[in-house]
Amino acid sequence: MGTQARPLVARTPIIELPPELQKTIKEASKDFEVINIDLDQITKEMARRVEGLLLYMPVNLRINSKVMDYFPNLKVISNCGVGINHIDIAAATERGIAVGNTPDVVTDCTADLAFSLLLASARNVVEGDRIARGPETKEFLHLHGYFGSKVSGSTIGIVGLGRIGSAVAKRANGFGMKVLYHNRNRRKADEKKLDAHFCTTLSDLLPQSDFVVLCTPLTSETRHLIAAKELSLMKPTATLVNIARGGVVNHDDLTDALKNGVIRAAALDVTEPEPLPRDHPLLKMANVTLTPHFGSATANTRMNMMELVVMNLRSGLNGEELPFGVN
Ligand SMILES: O=CC(=O)O
Image 1 (cartoon, rainbow, N blue to C red):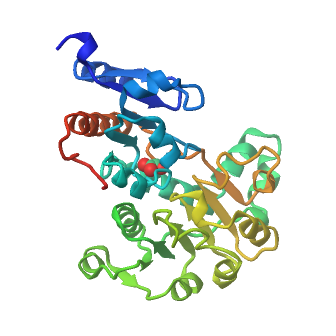
Image 2 (image 1 turned 30 degrees about the vertical axis):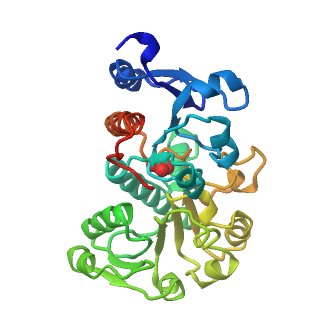
């Protein structure tokens, strides 16, 4: 196949891909050509040539019907990530555009990060690091205010027992934690495997949990699932961990709850908005532990994700069913 005949895939947003991932894309480039584009800048003429969209970590990108209509020959949208709340799936389906994501390969790393955040928050790891480097080590370390929250043997409440939620439960088993979960549908088979107890309602799970870990996708049903009322149901000693999507939590209510001691702490890989404005009150709070939405950010996982992205692109460009399709 000559160079001219290769379908064009537009990659967005424009950030430098890590070298390992560039290699995967390069290897695929015998099948298609990848160009970097800025959605606000791309000309109509160039957009007409684009048959695939590759979304790499699209933090604030919204792929709605207007964007899709700008690409009249679009066949496939391949998302590097499992969450697809930024893509209007119904609009894509209406237009015959296949959408693919990267499930499974992100599961372990994201669950690992959930536990990193949980432990770091519970045991004041970030603050401890600061103290250990500073002049006040001896005086501060044994003050009551720096006592952490015991993880082993405590109760974890997992909201959303999908792939990642189940992987979090597995890790919790290793810490001897009592595992509660709330999910739209009861997962009886998983309950046995994970020694997990079903809570019919969120209101049942929240007051019992020392750590509440959000693992649910962001949908119209889960937007602001955790707001003032839910936070008030949690123990004042409890910690909220969010590795799902920022939109699952009402951040004004969370800020108030943390300020007023309604809950002990929050550990967030995702926020709303993302990133938080530099003057956001959450950034100034000692009982907030933050990471910059990087649940899947290990070299191995990102390479595995890019392989799936390329598989989805190849199939979509050929008009075949995507191996990891969502519509
Ligand atoms: O946020 C990460 C993902 O959706 O995989």
